[in-house]
Image 1 (cartoon, rainbow, N blue to C red):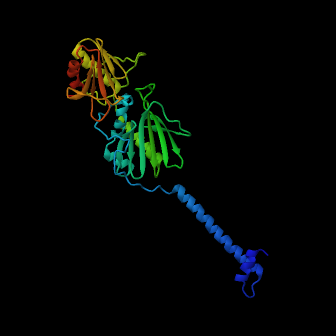
Image 2 (image 1 turned 90 degrees about the vertical axis):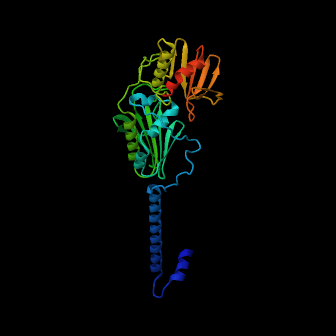
Image 3 (image 1 turned 180 degrees about the vertical axis):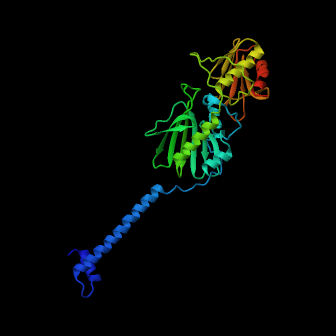
Length: 333
């Protein structure tokens, strides 16, 4: 007889009860414990999969280490939202919905910042990332969705607390200045697929209100000349920047401007170029109240204190005088 059964027989035997009966009782009890243990293990596994993730505390320091605070930016209309400089795109995406609407959508206090050109939103139970991109993400098994009249693709990521959605906003081909796709990524608790669709739908509806289409671009990058009402070039779409540069250079120099899609214009041999990707440098002078540096026939002006946006004018006989003449209107003064 096996040692376990022998021990059980010695400890559990009762007068008048046969050994076979004792063994049967023991086996039944052991099976009962095994069933309870199996059930508990199953429930633990189910709870681990389906139980909402615990809420986390919001960070005391915000923006985060690599984030940028929101600044007031103009919101473009029509297709121009897809032609924003990198320093501006994330700002616009974060601000298409106001603070109250973000918190209503996400169900609690929301913190917003711009990180690596994307809009980053954080609550105690969810995290959202929105970015304009040249191409959509490579999704594994997406479902087709309609996002405010634009085609989109949505997928879950295991363990179904993450979702990604791509929306094609315009048919124009992608380029360094045109980002036809909006990418939305959400992680958190609850129905993240529904939340992701809701965020995308509201952002697209708010960002693409009726407005102008993207201008046609020639092979050399030039676009048709327009003379729009004066607006600041800071945080404006690329074509708008080019048209404003042409308008102000033509007003100061005479002649007709030749605008390009990428934020530059040439008038009578003088070229003005906008950029938001500049290596930090020293601006020892002041022109029209802004930090500047003059080298030969070139002047560079730092347009804002809280971004890398810069304007360079090259080829003028008097670059300082020209900059002083055009800069106030280019800054919307």
